[in-house]
Length: 415
Image (cartoon, rainbow, N blue to C red; front, side):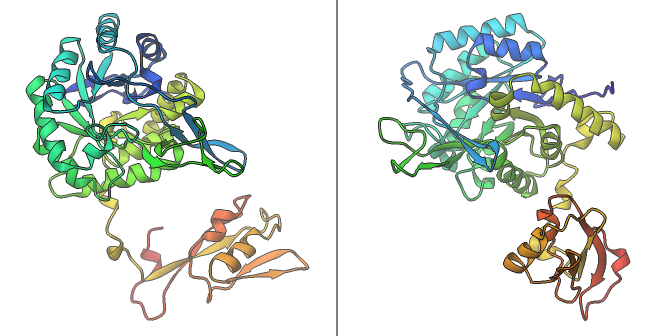
C-alpha cells in the first residue's frame, strides 16, 4: 500500500489529512462526529451553531435529489437549517469531542443575528475547545434575512460580522461564502478586511431541483407547497471550482487560504480542488450517500496520485493549476485539433453523426454499408462533441492543424 504524507497546515492548524465533514446534517452531534474521527476524517466542521434564542423548526420531508438517466444523486436539494439542538447541548458536544479526540481538528461553525451574537458565539465555541471557527455567512434556507446567504451577499455586513468574531475570539477563522452572487471576490475581500484568516467556498446553490408534474408542486412537498433551498453534490462542483479560481486570481488574493467545498465525491474531485488552491476539503453529499467510510477511498486515491506526481507532501500540489487558467480572450485560437476515430473500437452506433449534425458543425459523414463515420477536416472545427458522446471511447484527439492564414507550427501546440 502506498503511503504519502497527507497532512497539511491550514490557518496555523495541523490536519492529519485535508478531508473534513462540512457543516451540515453529517456532523450535528457528538456520536456522528466521533464516528467520523474513528473512520479517519482529518477534521469536523460541526453543524452551524446559532444563538440561544433562535428557534429552529424543521420541515418534513426536507430532501430531494436530481438524477440523470439511472444515475442517482447527481445533485442534492436540502431544506435543513442550522443545528436544531439547544446551544448548551451543542457546546457540550464540542467539549466532549475535544476531550475524546484532542489530536483531531474541531471546527465550530457559527451564525449570529447581529454583531453582539456573532461575538458571543465566537467566545463560547472557543471556550468549548474548538480549534478554528467557520462563519456561516451563506446558508440559503434561513427564514431570517439577518442570517444566511443574504448576509454573505452584503460586503459591509461580512466585514462587520468578521470584526465581531475576531473581537470574541483569537482562534483562526474562515468565512463561508455564498455562491448565490455574481462576484465572490468582493465579499471575500470584505471578510479578509474584517479579519478573516481564510475563506470556505462554496455553500449550497439556491435551487428547485424537481417539480411534481401531476401536483404542480416543487419537491419535496410540505403540505402542498415547497420552497427554494440549497443544492449540493456533484452537479455544483464546476461552480465551486469557478469561484475558487476567481478568488485566487484576484489581485491581493493570489495566496488566499481556502477550504474547498462543493461536489467532492472522489479523490479526483479532491485533487482538482487542491490544484486550484484549496488546502482543506469539506464533504457532505457523498457521505450522505455512501457513509463516512468513503474517507478510505479519498485518502488512498489521493496518496496514489501524489506518488504518480512524485510529490511527498500535499502542500506541494496546492494551487498548481491556478496559473494555467487565463482569461478567455488570451487563449490561443490559431489552431484546431481534429478528432481521430479508431475504427477497431467503433461499434457503428452513429452517436457521433447525430450529435455533429444536430448539435455541432455537420462535419461527419456516414458510410451506410460499413457503418463507419468519417471526419471532413475542412468542415470540422475541432469542438470534440463527437469525442464526448462516443459511448466506447473510440474517438480521441488527433491531428493538430493551423487555421488558414495563421502563423505558427502545429507541432508546437500543447493539447
